[in-house]
Length: 142
Image 1 (cartoon, rainbow, N blue to C red):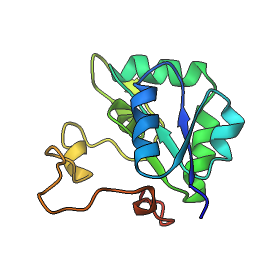
Image 2 (tube, rainbow, N blue to C red):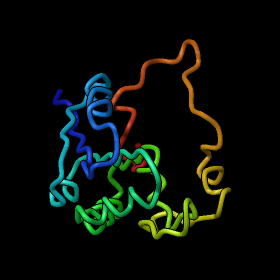
Image 3 (cartoon, one colour):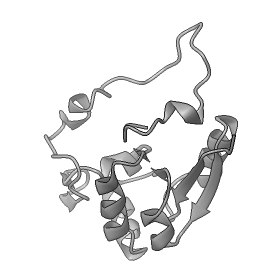
Image 4 (cartoon, rainbow, N blue to C red):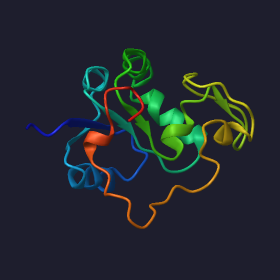
């Protein structure tokens, strides 16, 4: 069986090597890319992110990733945002001022993370199996 391919968007925000190692551990084949066309055509796509929303979005736009990621999101293929990489899915943010996001998810103020069901830290329970890349199925939720 061929290991699933996962593109990790490199827009200067995020711990890319840690994400790549996690993908490998889960059985996938990571590729870090700054190429907007690769993002649009990816099998699976991860947007990492560390820092403030405005800085993240500015860097994302400077790399020309907005339209390719919007196109990708519309396909229903698995799309994962990590930390502020997930927050830019919202249409805006109020962190350190008001900033425009991608508009994939409506912003509901501070309740937005609760809206997504992520109001608390995620954790692994004793006895849970290790996650694999196959857990990121083809339903667009991986």
